[in-house]
Image (cartoon, rainbow, N blue to C red; front, side, top):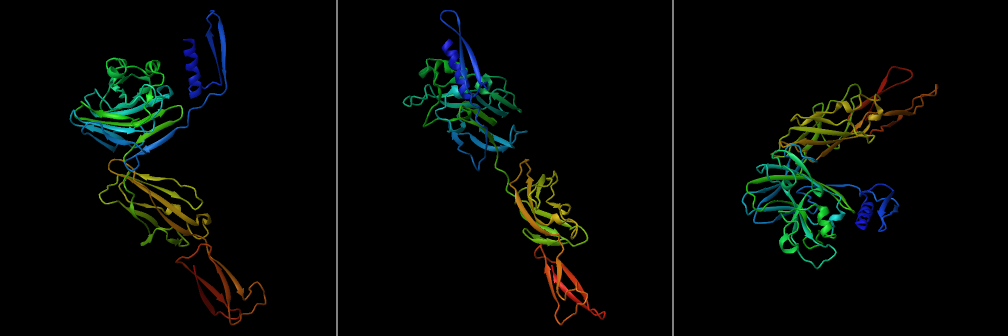
Length: 428
């Protein structure tokens, strides 16, 4: 008893469950006295949390498995407001012979005693307020013994641990709940069966090295079916913390395709992405960004994130409108010299929200704005000399830090002895 208590505290120190730097345990000696036992050193912190978004496009190793003859797995928006992200994984079975699993094979060899958190959220659309997706673990009574072979599964079922309510998200703290062994009667002496489920603590007391079998099965996942009929349920927000990992899984549908045909219009002219344009010198540019939706998509909102020449992000423009354009003149310099820091590259990232409330992949379009006047310098004649004379050639130097463009500046040069004027257009 005393040794067991000491081992438990020491294991918690190792796993970072106890955060103190020193723990004093008073152990009762066989003589009835008190023996102070001091554990010193810094307890290990919990591993840093890693959040993984699992989608049909990138499942990160999660598998869609038929555990009986049928059923289906899909990734959907919602239902309602998902606990994290925008959606969830949906398990559906029709007949009693159907069974479907969403499973990961990344945790083979993990002991139950090394799990400090195992939680997940469920939403039941059709289940008669009774059943919800269960957690299934391919179990081994001793993960250090690779010769034991398959020993069935360890199962957590929400209805054994609370009240299942259809039409709402519920979160289950499975590591604190009751579990049952599918091969209790044949391999585990009728211990911890469906009729007499056990907690993790009870299971570890019976089998200290019990955990996820170290291959080739080694699945940890969620199941619906096998004697269920007409069931539709969802899982999300799976959080598993062990002594070496801290993994949060967000199950989401694939985002809609990005908007297409991004472009700008300025004063009636269409400008493609990457164009360079000028301020007109006296008033704001009337510049509008526009985009198209992919075929078959509808929009219930949009958001546009600008990035300014400085590299900073401006205010995100968002709307629940179905519009597919946005006036962006407010971001642009108001005339030559009025806002010289506005010169440079402006990028705009655009996303739309589809009919199911999912945000699309982003698409980006940019423009280069030139808001700085060109600089004109006379080389010949030198007007700074009061005795200058005008020869047959007039030489000027023009510098345009903004690059190429469409505006034109007209330079007026007057001879010293008459009103004759020379007009010299300088491209800007």
